[in-house]
Length: 160
Image (cartoon, rainbow, N blue to C red; front, side):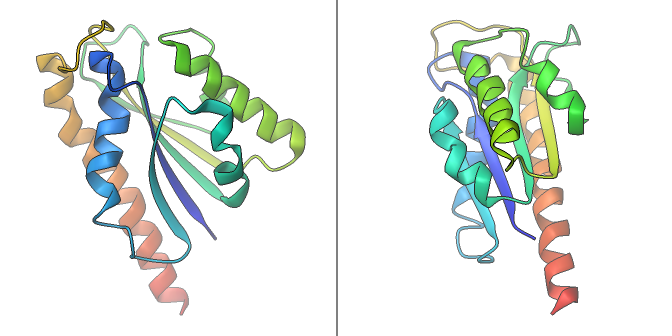
């Protein structure tokens, strides 16, 4: 089992950066944790991330979402429910994520397990500062992502 954690978002567009920033904060901590774990800030790369997605058995995404929830709310969305989230275009990279998941599926290497941890945005503007609500929600988003990683590492340790 190989786990890929991808942080998605544009760091120049305030709340859109939340997923990328959270995963960026975890990259160094887990850089050498396990050969079957990759923690990567994917930014706005879209289809350029396809080789990484092909490598993974489980894909965990962290991204900003717009689901008409209170700003800063963190949600977990799994499986076939992930792709529709990217159909409402919050920012340009989300079309890239939709295309990435669809291309991976058509090519036959969409990871069997896909999980999205999303954080409800308040504002998407050209600004490098998160809104107070999203900044307050980021530790919760980080906690969920770390739980995914720690559960993966524990399972790997038990299997050995």
